[in-house]
Image (cartoon, rainbow, N blue to C red; front, side):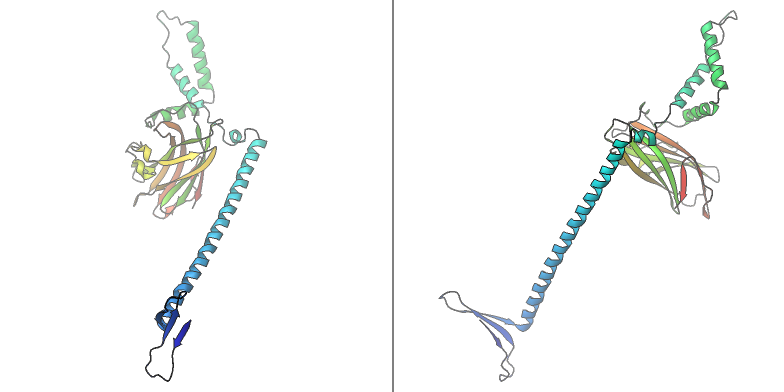
Length: 306
């Protein structure tokens, strides 16, 4: 039972709400509350009700979005696996393994340095056959491969030799130019028969300033590239974990107030213990000046202006 005490015949009487209640046969109790307090209690209860309703709606919406994304993911995965099942060796066709021509060219160079004829002016038949093979190799159109082998031998080593058959291959590198950075995107694919691979990836860009100074820029910068282009902290590179295929990206920050040309980008994949897995050298010619990136970018892969 409630009584609103607002009799106009009583001047100066404070308006308030009196709530009189009792339980069974016990004596009655009175709860007195001013109208302002009563209004605040009503507002608080209304806000609490609205918040509860909004929370239920938000949770229901997020759950519906999660279910939708899960269904889309399942459809995408089923499409990929169906395509892989219908087309034999689809990943091998899309990402062929790198040829071993450089190793063969290096072997030909070592054979060309064989000892001369023995004393007496006579040369065994075996040496003659080897000399004929070397001459045939030198006359073949593999001179460019030999030069590439010499250049790769003169490059600074990354500290560990790569595995003979890499479990992860690097493919389709693309360079994107931005006002304050150079972005590198590429694909990682696992070798057939390898279901999962993880490790670290990094890249080192060779930059020659307009004054002729050679500099090296690492991505990510935490790998701390030395003056020779060798990362001193390779285990601080970007981590990865893939099943069959994944696209990755790295960014090279531009050196402030330095203008010149990017000439090469070296991409490396290492294992969780620091062992080398695979690498990729991308020859480029990207010049940046005071007006920004020059048009007509040239790379062996692809280059786009961001």
